[in-house]
Each structure stands twice: as C-alpha cells, then as structure tokens.
Image (cartoon, rainbow, N blue to C red; front, side, top):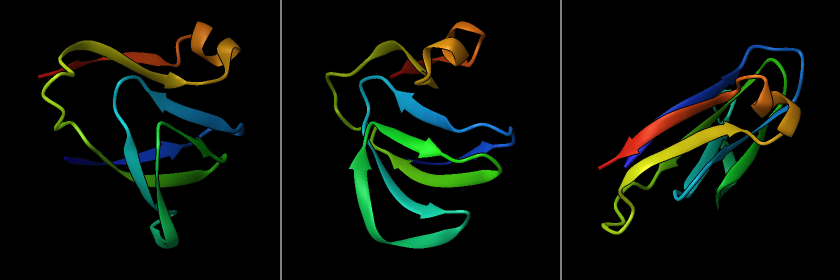
Length: 86
C-alpha cells in the first residue's frame, strides 16, 4: 500500500484516475472523511487536495500502467503519466 496526496494547484476541477489499481479516499484537504470510499476515480476540486491509499498488493497487476486526469482534453494536453507496477 502507498499513501498519495493528490494536489490540484490549478483553477479547474480534475478527476484523477489510475488504471488497474483502486484506492481508498480517506481525506480532503487533510481533513479525514466521515465515510472513506474505495474508488478508481476521484474529483479533485481546484485549489484542493485528496489523500488516498493505493492498493498495489494484487500479484496479477504488474507492468506499465497510467494515471491521468479523466477529462479527455486535459489528458490530451499532457495530464497523464506512466507508472510501473511491480
């Protein structure tokens, strides 16, 4: 498992999505959520952050994958990165 803080420093909403991995959304702007939820996409409002715990424990999920903004025009303009799952 890994903890990530996803920070949106822009002036637009960005739905964060990662392929092959689910994550537990447990805080927004550092404040714990009353009901954490397992998701594969989470909206990160502008000027905000979301804290997640990613589950990389599935032994079947290996190799190159991606994470990105789930808005196609943002993704097409470079809001996408590769991640190597071992």
